[in-house]
Length: 378
Ligand SMILES: *Cc1c(COP(=O)(O)O)cnc(C)c1O
Image (cartoon, rainbow, N blue to C red; front, side, top):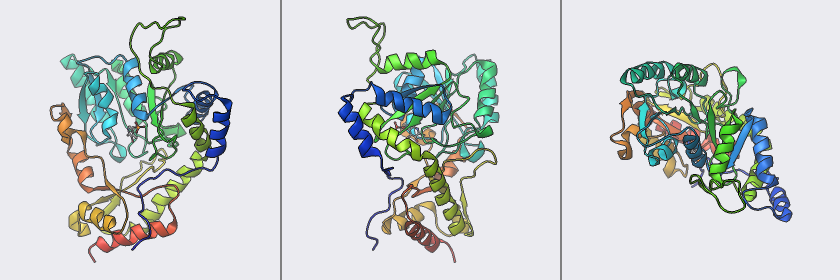
């Protein structure tokens, strides 16, 4: 029996966290204000290339603020790929918006700009364009953001990129994930490639939009000596304590991307010869951070289905997770309008996320490969 359970994507410390925390605590600034959040935001601007960044309590909070500043109102449609995490659309739904889910026919299972362009033209004919389009960088793999932005431009529909899992990923032209969208949301949850222990960021080109999000994140207080509110906001500012952790993590981002890409390469090397097993494709442009390595198992050729492989790994002490269950198949969204969905459903049926943590050892990985190989038809 293996000594310890191998987790999917546990947080990994960079080494400087304690010093960074001590400096922040000793400075007396522990609120969601002060030098640490500001320094974290500046570091994020540097890494992503976005001039304006707001650090938030989570990626979901960043998405919520994005929806707010884009003016999402009850009855508005917001469009997202169906193959994603619930948080992509949850805040918009809670605001009374109607999600419309599009299939995963684009590069690497992401939103397809061609399909989007067709559907936008159709929506314009219906006289009901979406308030926002929200593409997702799937498991860190950049969507074709240039194509998506180009599809939205003629209709004046803003793009809010859910780049929550894509810190350190590069899209076309070497641009950071999310770059080119009106707004992009990032996550520093414990399972992401770099973490604050829980946090996120909203980034954009327009300083006025981010300033608006910043005001909303701080309870929408108007500049007055007393508490004055023209609208209501949220308590979404990232604490200085957590920003200090993020500041210690961020310098290791490039190393972590290299590490996760090496983990993917080792899976490809160790499993790539098996019939019926393939990997979520990386398009020939861009460079994924390979947040999670995803294998696709075609049961007839492989000799076992994804669930059998998942159970075998679980019994061997290895945590895995099926690919996102498409949102159009979730009871919570049973009434949401849908475009296609068959490709996403197959990716869910066949997709399995393998352990991909930055601190995983070669021996850990050999164990995973051995169990997967033992499931294959021989
Ligand atoms: C992690 C994640 C989120 C949510 O981020 P939190 O910081 O956990 O709120 C949203 N979308 C995607 C695609 C994610 O992977």
